[in-house]
Image (tube, rainbow, N blue to C red; front, top):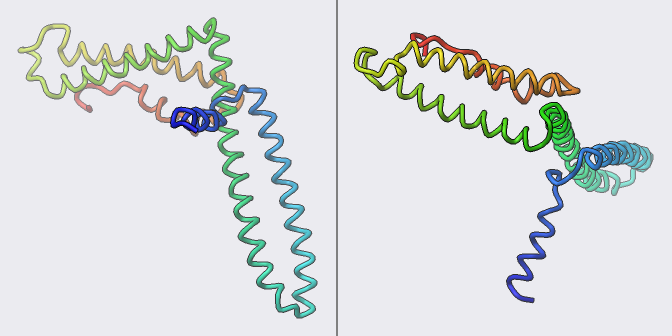
Length: 196
C-alpha cells in the first residue's frame, strides 16, 4: 500500500465526525446516544444485582469482578456523556445557523455576515489600538480623534448586538446562546474612550 493510499484511507476515517452531520443526522444520533446511555444504565443495574448477591454470599471474586466492571462501564459512560455533550452543542449550533441562513436569504448571506463581522472586529481592534497609542487628538486627523473612534465603535457595537440578537432569536434554547455566546453580548457594549 502506497503512502498516498494510506493518507486517503486515514482522511476517510477523519471525515467521520459530528461536524459533517446534518441537523437531522445529529438529532437521530443524539436520540440513539441517549438510548445507549439508558441501556448502559440498565446493564449496570443488572450487573450490580448479580454482584451484590455474589458479594453477600462471600464470593471472593466479586470484588475483583466489580472493579473490572467499574472500569469498563465508566469508560463507556464517559464516552457516551462526552458524545452527548458534543452532539447537543453541534445540534444547537447547526439549528441556529440553519435558521439564521433562512432569515438572511441563504447560507451565502450568512457567510457574508460572518465575514463582515470578522472584518469589523479586526478593523475596530486596529482603531482601538491606534486610539491607545496615538498622541493627543490635536495631532490626529479629524476622523481619527478619540471621539470619532468612539462613534465608530458604537456603530460597530450596534451591528454586533444586532447579530447577537438575531442569533438569540434563531435559537430554540436561549440558554445555550447565553452559555456559549455571552462574550459576544458583553463585547457589543461600547466603552467610552476615557474608560478604555
